[in-house]
Image (cartoon, rainbow, N blue to C red; front, side, top):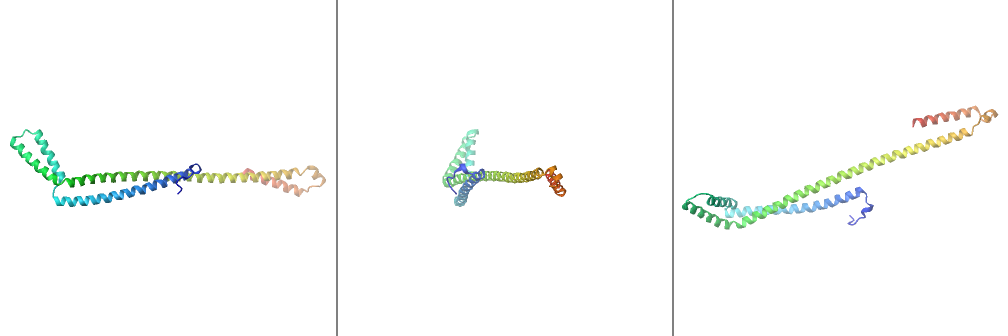
Length: 211
């Protein structure tokens, strides 16, 4: 496809076809990006699951527990002994969390990749919607062109019919002008010829009225 076509000479359907092809190219590019991100998500998910099995530690669960303990220390009217127990548990949780920093990093990356997938899927939906709209516009233009073609053919037929009638009318006038009463009296025109001319005249008038 010409990268720099002269748009001034392009029809509306040509321009729409060009836009449609550009969108298909874009759709293909986004589709490739989506496939790559889906593959990346699968790989990270598998690695993360394996890491979680190795450590046996659920970082999300530990962080929820840590937030809970910190909240209790700040809000509860606890005894010194109870507060010390909370602090010991907090220290233990923090030591365990040191072991899951890698898995948490992987989890954050997984969330980022899933966000990329979601955006790519939304972009694909929008591109497909634009392509469908352009296809509808092209169909409308072609239908309009088809109707215009039919109307032009009808006008052409009517003009042709009108020209034929005018030709017959002119021929009839020519035949009538060639006849005069003196010719009849002088015997220059036979009665049979007059009857034929009248018959042609009546037939042409009937044909003209019916059209």
